[in-house]
Length: 154
Length: 126
Image 1: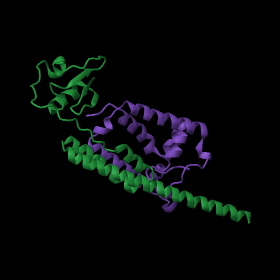
Image 2: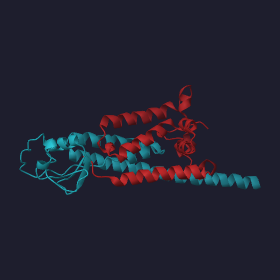
Image 3: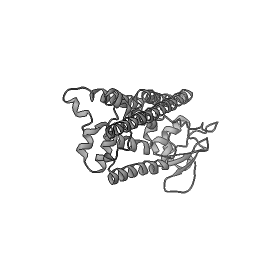
Image 4: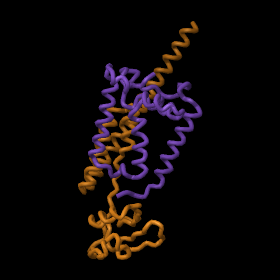
């Protein structure tokens, strides 16, 4: 397993050798990327890890690797909102979460960020409506219970 | 690509341990402090998440069969989703799987409201 410093300065990983080879192919990792093997403390470059390059050093990239895309898909909040009785508005949140992952894997970062924003928006709509309906429902239930108790006492 | 997320272990572990502890120690079934589902109160329908709280209480007491009969979907899905989230796989899940999850949730919600056997087994058992 390896960790890397992306071009955005953030740390990514731990990733398997397989994933690292994928990142090299995508241009996210190049000769300038600093890489740390798990269990070591040194940050090295690809040249020091022949197991990642198949023995041959990768071609020198003319530009630094572009920032690794990390667009939150809000899938966990979306599922939470859907299952906690805010069903109708949780569903679009899950739909947009699926679009985030779909557009990310297609390389459409801008589209993924747009879908991410919508997933977040629908989660908050579902959450607030669910909360409001439960509070109102709780008050009505409480009033009914109080009225019933009062009635019995009469 | 996944960012380093050691805090997810802490968050998931705290939620799981906290829920198990509170539900096992306090038996909220007898407390009536938990909100009643408004959808169920108004329409009488069972939503896909209906029975989750009661299922978790039963599970915390080791009554797995009773827990499954209250809400089989969330009892199975919660640990799976938790593990996928902690390991970062949820962030890169193929859209097909997310669509499948959505279909399962909606189908579960529809089927458990059908008044015939065997679908009635999916409805929360009192």
